[in-house]
Image (cartoon, rainbow, N blue to C red; front, side, top):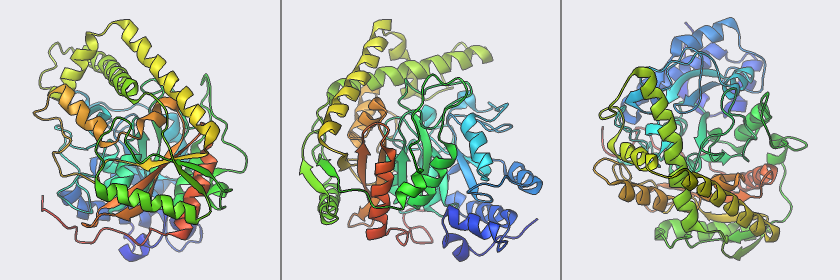
Length: 485
């Protein structure tokens, strides 16, 4: 078995940098994999970012020889919701799916392998990805490497914790209401939600939660994120529609400054949800910073019906999870779901089961209305700027469902990130860009979105911000601070 390389050497490179070392034979893919495994072994007792390990499957794949691609030899992990890898568990954060083993790779996972990535684990996620905190009762909480008493966000919280802690330079995520962007902001990472259907969800599914769930990644560098999307974007066989990737590629876009942009800035939450003053101050500084880069920044409103969208998301998510839970329970011969899923999620699907069919149709109509409203906004502006979340990473338990009614749980969920879900409803791209921190040293990101299909402009803007105000040096202290688990 290969030996790990030094952590300092490993940490000094992003994914493309590590792949370049493999191509030059400075290190081997096996050495990189063992480094990631050793780093995870050392830190998992504190962070609990990973829930299903398949180190030996990854070792065997590396030993057979990885495909030549932009990330050949780079270690990688998958979110434990929606991403099937042959021979591995996909438990979706729930006891009900605890022993569900995938028979094949999804299209996106196959594309990750073709890009040369070495996949060795699944990351922790809340049950059914229905939270902005990663505290599933079936597997226990993930912790934020910036402060172990706080959450890394959700639902891609395990992926965020793993990257922020330095297990690996980038990781798979998905985003149904902000689930890539919120963890990115809470852990000091770059998180990108592409335009709907730029990345495929096949070969079985076409869309997740009525098209609101979009897969991609969290990363330390903009260029890794862009290069990964270059490697994975494009329609699957039989997809009814797809978004053109655009000329030139996303990595190329990330390397050039954008034209001067018209940026609409919304500092006030759509439904008046309170925004922490420290978060608001960081985003206001971001607005001034963008003006300093030569962009036009103007305070405005996005102009969509936020109350209707909040109600619609609850309906669509509840009905979709209800269908999945019923199918699994029927397959296992389970009549009573008590003890199989978390009480708050049981309450959610029970509520969804009582809805008329017209409620779902009406909720889909609300998504379309939100998309029209955001489209009108982007006739006047190129980019929408806001906070990512209402606070920096909250303490463990703050957003968890235990002991809460469905309404209280859902209000806390929505109020934590009231700016992000309109980009899921519309399918438009959006990103969280590391920018500042609170007095306690917790990361705070900027939320920036663009019109549908204009992912390249966001990558150009992210690259410009990264070059002007680098963030790679801002890393959580080791050993991790905060409460000892």
